Image 1: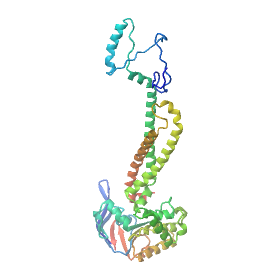
Image 2: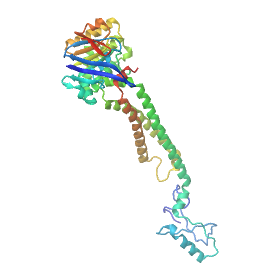
Image 3: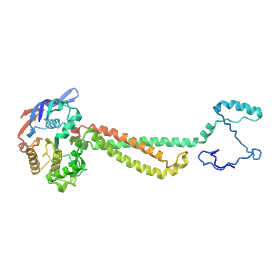
Length: 208
Length: 221
């Protein structure tokens, strides 16, 4: 019996437990696998392995041969598919968030054309207008990201079973995701802000 | 202070040009109170916008306090406008979501003035215009005359050398209009150059000089 070895012989998302090694003749299983470790590319030794097995037991049907990489990959294929789906949904959500912020800020800017004209007539320069629009947009974005991070903390338990090798409240992941969202929000605010800065104050002052 | 030489402006409409101002030659000295009159579409507001450097798309030469405005880029023109010029509009153009104090602070916030100094200047201006009691009110809580009073206060808060007033009494009752015109007169007597646009003969008489525009031409000076 062994404990403490990092052995996952069925699935990867379960913590290694106790392992009991028994002689084959003492406890025969219907199915078994032969694992061969090689320094070379495992696929290159497949033919040699088949030949060796035939020499030892010519009557035995040759089993399927797979590299350990394939075995691991197949064992996580379902999780990988789920994660790919989540990634796609997250990507779509990010694009929708960017389009949403862009739309809201563009609408807000169009509603504030007159105000921007007044500000420019009172001495605001283009950078002041960009700062105003981006600043107000980013306040909304930061409030949204803060609420989102809070909600994510609360909901991560639901998806902890899908994660492997990373904690459900991994700070690095949270920081990177937050920065990504803030970056996307900045771009979505900056584009309408740049348009706002091109407002002709004389036209804007007539616009009410 | 202001020298315009052959200033012209037009709008391109398809293949043809619609002229708004034609060969404007004008000299305005520091300390003058000038009235610009003319019918609608004569080019009065456009001329004011060019003098106020809000409009940069015109031909000709414009010298303002030894600065050749026609040679300046937009940024430099904006700096000049910010430093020397204050605007008063017919529709007041106060920002409704800001209080009276915040509206007064706006022009200062676009200049390199520290917050504490800005607060002191705003307090002095509120006191000078006797609107201290209104400082926390929003423009919609004020009468038209009071709003224009705040707009004039906002125009002079940056200590401009030139005030451009585009029909400052156009939306006001006559008694409120007189109050604003008296105020402009007082500012002029204190040394500020004032150029106003008006349709009203009585308010025009506050100026020492009346310039009449018609179809973009100066027809009388």
